[in-house]
Image 1: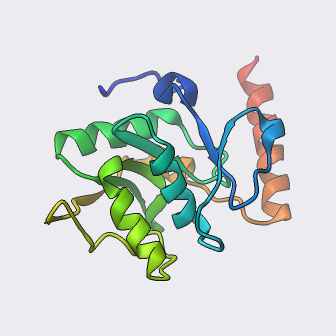
Image 2 (image 1 turned 90 degrees about the vertical axis):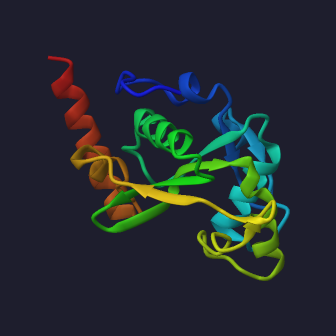
Image 3 (image 1 turned 180 degrees about the vertical axis):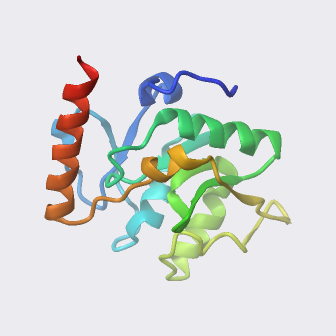
Length: 178
């Protein structure tokens, strides 16, 4: 991976294969994405991470929460560049509100540690960070990508926030066509 990619690059162009972690029930097939089903009931995003890592065909996966409508693939590429450059297992986006575990890149080496955390009843996305992999500690890093990334990690969690984001997107889209 290399830095300096087009800011408008699509997730498919970066990843080649986009998976949708859907919990324990295969749902959202109408979205046209390949679905991965959680093996751990009530595991939340950590179980989705485990399912994604298990389904991965490559060394790395990019993780993005479904409630981040402004996310840009180029931010994930930059995180991957940093992870590879520093031989990390995990590289997460760091913003003013803190580290974003659902906006990052994870190496497949994390799979055993994630599964072990789930088996132990853990559910926090960072609960596996202290676990050993291949006899060594996981290498986890968080990177601040600047002011642009603050917007990229915006979480939309309520119907009111969703409506406001839709209105903003419509205004932004209309303004860019002029």
